Length: 316
Length: 316
Image (cartoon, rainbow over all chains, first blue to last red; front, side):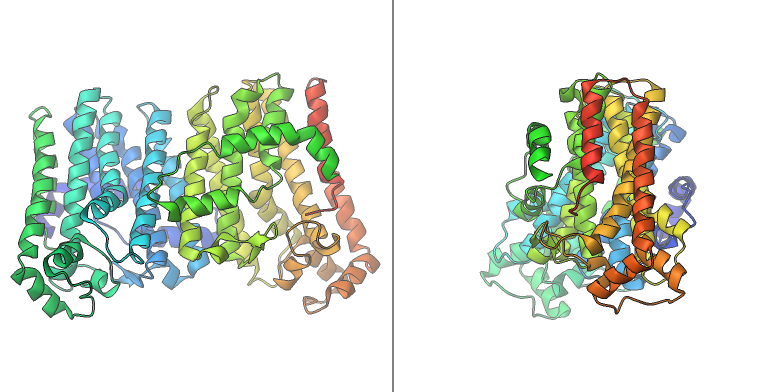
């Protein structure tokens, strides 16, 4: 998929990267700005800012009017990554040392704080839309993401997490940011409320589908595709939809000690893998249905194409 | 001073505390909201939100129009405290365990993030003023505060910090938030640009004076006045105006191993203590001069009274 992805979205990603990097560091404070630059240079897939741009264009908005919001959601996403990596004690991200490993925890806390500040600063540079409304929506989303991360952490000490609890957690931790990305695209295009609702629905279900699929890929993705280690959730005893469904099936509270291959076979033989695939695909279907409500344009096709690439991905 | 302070500002502090606590926690995420409530219940002196209210009233603004901004600066201040306590490895604040000691580092990182989110959310509830402009100013200030904290941390590994570097650091770490508080008070009163400039100047110099005085009080304040341990800067080998001036005098690079009494005597005998007192008092004088530019009202007198209480304090 990588080649096709680059071909279709490479130009947009260049624009996004330029916008993200467009801040002036205080040269006296390299301990603050170096890790921020380092993190931004790890070059994520930029899915969220792409959603902002494509949603704006699908609503007949101008790309340049959505760039600030696009950069803002990516900066916000990077804030969550830096702080989450500390909490999850992850040593690597995209094959590179995480910020707290390359520097230290204090530096990483500050870098995360800074990325959050830069995110709001960037959003407030939006050339169109009600900046106070856009910022209020981003603040609200950011608080919900923190709630989601707190829930995820609390699950580590909770034996029996229900499917409902898990879905609520990933809705907060993942789906609301994709929802916000699509909404901000619509706001940057100054589109109508009805369309905004459909964009939000699209982003929200895309986010749920993405996360459920992500948990599955943690187990079944081919090794060495991207920086993330395979099986890391299992190793960290994370509760995911996989472990919850397996537990329901097997009435066996603990299988974290199993090796990856045994766990994979279990997933397959119990039919849990098939169930999970059905579940994330049904989320993608809901996302596509919301997309159908937008006017038929080549811009809508690009949005569809991006979502389809995500659904069919084999990488994490 | 405590009795007089309470008498004059107790009612305002009650209003501030009510406004700060007026958010609805997600009951499913106690790991996120409990430490936030805990931190806010430690009951700081609320100097910054008081400045917002008093500045608004000194510009003929209504107190109720400034309450959201007042709560916002206090929430922002508490965000910096929670994250700084992790970085400085402080175990106590106001005689109580710090958040990362009572819970853990992950919980404290999230609590700080949440306080920052709540600060922006609160500011965006302002009933008057251009909310986008107010938020932009708060974001800018928050980034500068992070730069200041990064500088402070980097000084720990720097043998020879200059007076200029130190003053730049405390301007960022402390003075800009008091400056912002006064500015937001003026904005909430929808006053003119000239007055806003004077309010900012007042807050900025008050902040510098406050911080230099604070460094001195770390050494010479009477024990057990408030939660903070006396001599903690010395123990942490912090570079302050005291150590910088002493080094200039004695051409001796290291006196951190001296005990508190010896250090106190050194400060006194070298005349450094007197110099520091002169320096912070001159900052307060600049603050009072800015205040003189405001119209003479009983509200201005209250602002003067608060600043005077700070200048004459013997507590940290």
